Length: 293
Image 1: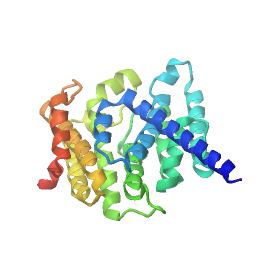
Image 2: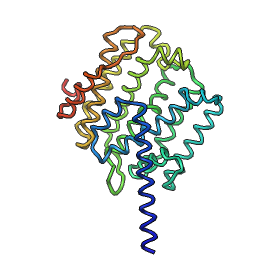
Image 3: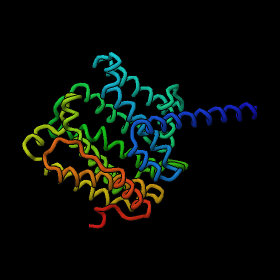
Image 4: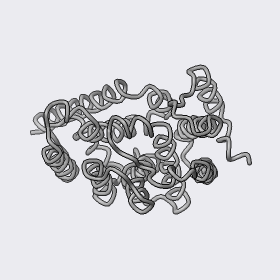
């Protein structure tokens, strides 16, 4: 009997590792910048953060092109999203999925206390991409919460709870910082991808505000969110601070470059040499840039 239980545990452990490897492969294929920041995480939170972002990437790909290229209609894509969300919820309850990326996410959700209150808004925002082409202020805020702020909150659950015997609720200060950092990341991406989003995906996430010449106001909001988030980073566990600082400073650099380029449509990027400098600065333990203001 003991041998049987031991073999079962070893089998599940092997499956867990295979699922985590699958999630890591997804991330490696899609985001070099994320991979750089993720390597600055300690070994305790790193695989869990990869698991979260791998699931988010799969959902993004359902609505952002590959599914359409495979011939799926908007209705079929929504059905696929519905099935994926249900599989995530079911796997989190039962501790197993035949979908390796879902299984990886579920192991993280179970250990770190990520529940339907965070999963449901994420999938709601993904469905929005299938039906909403132009956002107003209210739909922008709802979309940003589900697509970005809840990802920050999922990562916060990991930062606080990975490896702990029981999940605990993060402090309100850390919750606010995670939400505002996620919002800043998303708005930076909206600005730098606006031409592509409009021409290729047929979407305008910023709506009338950007049309009315309020780009500077959007950047002011981004800077305020980055500054508020920066003040909370020192309260994170030590094995998370460097990675979050590197990500924060990368997007602060992008925001600065967006402001410098005016209303141009060219996609702003940060050169690899500057990314390496920002990562080295974070690795040495420097505070996020706005934290020094």
